[in-house]
Length: 362
Image (cartoon, rainbow, N blue to C red):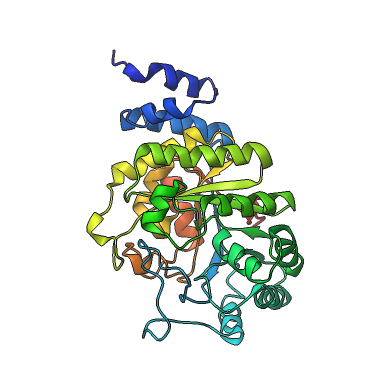
């Protein structure tokens, strides 16, 4: 009889007993056979959400790709005056909103470049206009890095700035901008960007005032497994403190059209290893998301066998961040019926959700 656990028996059995593993155990377990990681991650996933896999009907608004930062991994940012730069006016954004009003969407996801001039009050007014037009749709808006910049620019504390946005109608925060928390690596790949502590501080304050958020990691560039585990550990610690994270989203570095392109990209095997370890280590996160516009549809479906229980949303060809970096789906869009078929084909039961993981009544 084959011993599935082998040399990994001790940490593997801890996972199956629902005991928390340490950083050193996680780093060791990360080298385990992929078959074992699939078993452990699936066990952890099904304890959280059974046979359910979630998705939502959503669309993105990306107000600008101008940005005060110039991250080395970014394929999205453009300098002012570039032929493929954009900086939409409020009227143009509202036209985009109007085009999606009858799509059945329950969520608008707003992220973009960190604009050098537009401030907190501009964005609060924009959110109010969006909420007035489609009050039934939740607004999930701005990475922690965008938020820190606009709030600092207004001369406010994170608490006061977030309260203004919440009162304007912002209901949740996406997880972008985390990249990798290790400061030595940040200095190499995004030296101008806000620190790990800034990212964590914004999310901590958001949770304190009742805003839910997601968290991410950017993996597959110059980081090592020890750096990934450190990143997960900081997130797990903040979740122990606040309980405010809904989902974790592993984001794969894509190498098209950026200054780190010579690095190449990690394999699908490594993607599944990262997905499984996220589900195993983040024992206090309710959900792990396989973001299909980044992975591609087939790889996102495969991730359901490695601990993911959410495939994000229908998107409706409304985001360019990963298509500009070389993702397979250059015009990302998926119907609800296609999403449900992919989930069922993977052996799970699809559940349409809203932003807060409440099932949507058909």
